[in-house]
Length: 337
Image (tube, rainbow, N blue to C red; front, top):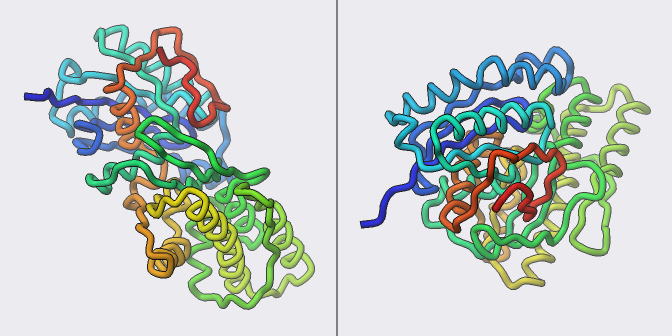
């Protein structure tokens, strides 16, 4: 009988300290998340030094709580998987250092996980039947990638942003119209009161890359020149034209690859307008559409544990020389042997 594999994931790439225990890559036994949003709201965005300090203060109790909720002892864990990139270097180092110490003390296998792979893997938890190949649109505060996922650990980047990530554009739009941080959920909420009546530019790159600096700048200029402009209309119009850019490239990728299974991932995939548009696209183009449940869209350790599982069963592992790599790219295997 095949042995169950228990993965302990640790996520500390930005402003969430999280530890999760996941069984066989798909079943969450615990997923503890300590968020710093309330702290960083005071500064209008994440302050890296404060984020690192907060991770240090809570990571031990978060790991203990995850083991307790999973009703497991550390000796029952098969592999310890921290996020080692991309992200804020100081924040990453807290999780990586803790995982290395835990691995050394217990003799458990250590395996670093790419944060972007984690976002993709979140869908395996929400949809136990989901299997590659599929197209994945990763949309978050730090990333906008269109990826062909050929297998659980095999990725081809078809397109990515040339400038701002879409989540970064959401945050800047929120700041301009006076909504504050975190911007994405607040823009989404206000947009529900608006109309799609403001024309904004769409950038066509000629390939499957994205650019959101033009639409972001247009929103900033409109708001500056017309201080009394309807903010709800501006937010909804921004959502509309930003989603147009996402949708256009996904349609092109479907045409080029002939893959009709599309997966969304990352914090921005929580956006209700984007989900509505992609549900409509699925009906129109007769494709399958998937996105994680909301608590798995934002940064969490369950997605890291799931991605770690698929790398672990391929025989991959890291050694105690593993370091944080803040600019780690999808598909890179630095620190993995």
